[in-house]
Image (cartoon, rainbow, N blue to C red; front, top):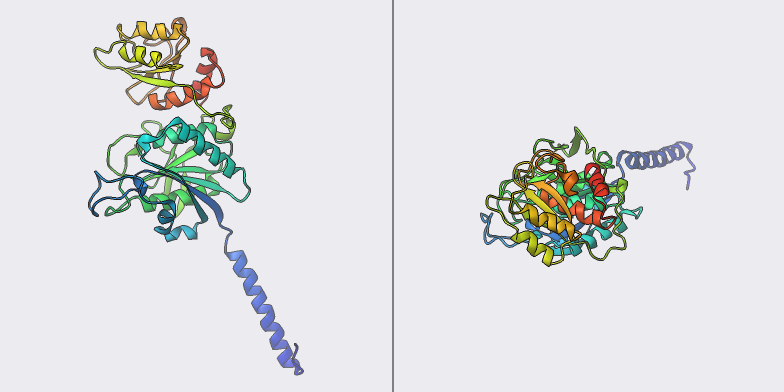
Length: 361
């Protein structure tokens, strides 16, 4: 109601206009927060120890996702966060079936317009494998960030809370769109394809030897300096939507005096593929080579990798791969080569096609 006094009416109108302008300005000033879903799978980040100084010998996978979120109230400043407990396991117990379940859930969520990014909390022992599997099968350019911790949640200077904060920040960031699946730990951004765990217990355990990290997180902002050049996520040819199982692929480790026992045992157990993590440039010892040749003759695809952990595996270098009809792993370590071979075998058994995939992904 306007006042009869013209001066009072003008004051009332001005006050109304000021309130409306202030509200509009507040809405404009406050950026819309992204919607990030945290999928929890267990691991050290959800672990607890007997005391605040227990950093080894703790129990993994004891803290639920809602407690993880509640422990980092700062998350509310960077994203609208929701959580789901997908599994509650130590990551050494991660299986192919877990991967398929997780990946299908990620794809369902990312297809929704009200989900802008995904964070997956994970144990560190197999974190790099889960991240690379997702890097090959997630069908979205939206950010997916895998995160873990080297110290349990109860430890002094536990790294889980800051790692979780940084991972949500990254998943909510436009800069992370189209970068593939990322790993965010120790204030660093790593590529799922190249990152590996290099130490049993220190906070800087996740690194990308030689090829280097993608960037840093500093001052609540991601800084990218390079990107993954190999195809990933929405660019890949792999579709797991109807898959219930993955082909059996096993790893044979090379060492002095290695023999055929492991190869023969894996073949007897039904292996469809063998990754040979050979010494040096994937060399084949005299005692193991005949077993690998026999495995190939029985229909298994053999991939030569290296136990060294760095460098390109040279095709027709330490073995005549063309003659043997073997595949080489390029720069992938043995555990990641296994993942790519499993997915490749859902498409083809042609070694030429599978070699193309190893040079593509």
